[in-house]
Structures are given as C-alpha cells and as structure tokens.
Length: 445
Image (tube, rainbow, N blue to C red; front, top):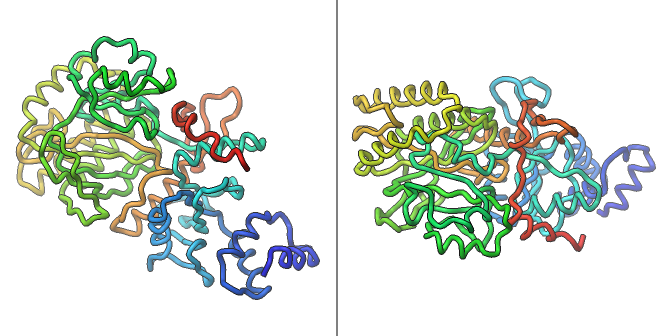
C-alpha cells in the first residue's frame, strides 16, 4: 500500500485535511506488512489524528527498546495494530494533566534513529532526544525557517550554585578563557579536581580528574566561552541513584550504579542494567536530597544523581564543609533544605533505630552520607527500570512537560507545556563546543 493510493483515496472523499506527508509515509512503513486500504486509513486516522506523539530520537537501539517496554507493560494500553516502531500508551496520573485536565494522558510512541532530521514534530508532541541530535535538528529547523525546539534544562552553573550541605564538595563554573589565565586552582580544590563541560559533553573532553596544566592543554582547542565545571574529588563513593524531578519534586527513583572497588582512582562500576543491587533504605534520602536541590534552584523538570559514600572519611569532610559554609551563596533559600533533609533523616532513623547528626546531610556512622552529584535534562535522561507504573508515568510526563513554548520577544520567562513559569536561563542552550561538533550534521537535507 503506497502513500499515493491512500492520499488519492482520502482526497477524493475530502477527508485528507491537514495530515502531513511525512506522517502518512511513516505510519504506513511501520504498520502491518500488507495492510488493506481500509486498514491503512484506520491507522492514519487513529495514530496521526487522535493522540499526540511521544518521539524517541536516538541512534541507541536499547534506549528505544526501553521506551517500547514502557508502552508494552500490562498496565498500559496498546492499539490493535501494535508494531515495533509505533505504539500507544494511555496513562493515569494523580491530579490534573495537560491533556483534558481529567487525570489521563495518551501518546503515540514513535522511534527514530536520527539519521536524518525528524520533520514531523507537532507542537503538542513530547520529545526524548539525544543532545547532539537536538543541536543538529534545531540547526536544520532554523535553516528551513522553523522555530527551534525548546526544553527546560539545568543551567551550566547549577552544581556550583548549590549549598555545600547538598553537594558535599566545593564547585565552581567558569569559562575556558578564564581557566587559560589561571596559575593555580582556587583554594581548597586540590591538585586534581574533577573537570567537565558545564552544559553537555564532547568526545575530546570527558569528565575526568586533571591537574591544571593538563586541563589547560585539554582546553586549548575549545571555544573561549565554553563553560567548564570544576569540583573537588569525593573519595569512597559506594552507590549512585537517579531521581526524576517533576514540577520540582521527586516522583521516581532508581539505583544507577554501585562502585565495585574502593581504590581511589577506580572507575569500576556495576549498573542497574547489569543487575546491581542497591540499599533500598537509601531511596527516601536520595529523593529528599534531590527535591531539596531542585526547589532551592527552582528546577522544575530534570533528573538528579545522588551519591552515597563510605562513612569512614566523613569526619574530616564535615569539618571542611563547616569551614567553607561562609563561601556558599547565602541568598539561596534554605527552608526546603532544612525541612526535607530533617524529614528524610527522621524517616531513615526510624528504620535503623539511630538518631544521626543532622548538621550536614546524614553524616553519622549509623546512616548514609548522601550528596548531589549532578543534574541532567529530563528529555535525555536514561530510561531506568522503575519499579511501579506510577513512576514510569511520571517519568514520561516530566519529559512531556519539559518541552516549553517559544519565548516571546522581550521577555525573561516562558511557559512549559504544563503551564509552569520557566526562567529564560533555564531554557536549554547548548555549549558552543557542542554546537561546533553537531550543528552541521543535517546540512545535506
């Protein structure tokens, strides 16, 4: 069955309307092997017209498969013509949602490898996309006089803006040009702090511990205005959790990895996808730490990595943190930090029959020491194997709501798809180094 036959059929009956050619082609290509004319029309009408689309754009097949599994679970409803590339999910949530305000949502799932620009993204669609492909797609859209796709994201200096009580370490964000003029790292950063691109990743500059000469060498070909995040090393990390933030609070969580070696320079880890087992009692503390960080920084939709560490090294670190409290931005509100942190401590203490020291996030020998590692855009966050349907739904909804309306000229705020105010600085703006790498990927189209 070809697009031309269906198009002619619908045109003759005055029912073609505003359906787009790309939608016809994709729907027919990914549907039944030999659909009849009536079946093809049914697919088009049911898929392209009734529900918004949840796009997964990534060359990584396992990420596509993970989202397909979300849409295939028993608690979700598939359409009668389910295929490997196009599925429908009907999700139920607590409270109002954008689709009708009745507590229910529905998407069509469409997966694309990103080998060419996706031309069929409607205003109401949700998008999960790799950052490099987003840069390429937006460059292509601008060349064709189309508006860029806009999303919420943590700012490049997000980590360094947080209190040390949450991060457990000193952090700073600066530019390449500034670093090239340094003669030493700032005080108390040590000789080999961690350094990475503040808002993205490029192949030639991975997150790593570097001396200042090595850092300056590795940045010699970087744009002067690229943002670089530098933070002190935290030894003895035992495990890490990923927390999904939606509307400023934790709505889902999953263990990410455990560190299988306590050697100072070891990068040996076992991920949740490899069968890693996590301390379930850490979940509540990880979620409250992430929520505190999100609310202090007014982060609506994102994912936050929270780490736990070996308690044997805590006493000196506690003294270090107290010594450096004066350097924290004291204009940040601490109401949420105090309330949420103490609440999580009480919850954990009730399970362990211990009362930990609450001057810093859980530093006693009876409870874990949690700290915020980083925050990432929700629209490119790894699809984790969440334990409940509610968590999966919340993850999908956070991705959908992270897409924002186009910023009106002359304003400092914009709106997310969930009608929340988003500061202009929280709109994703890729680092110039990433733009250099990816902006021309779709030049041939």
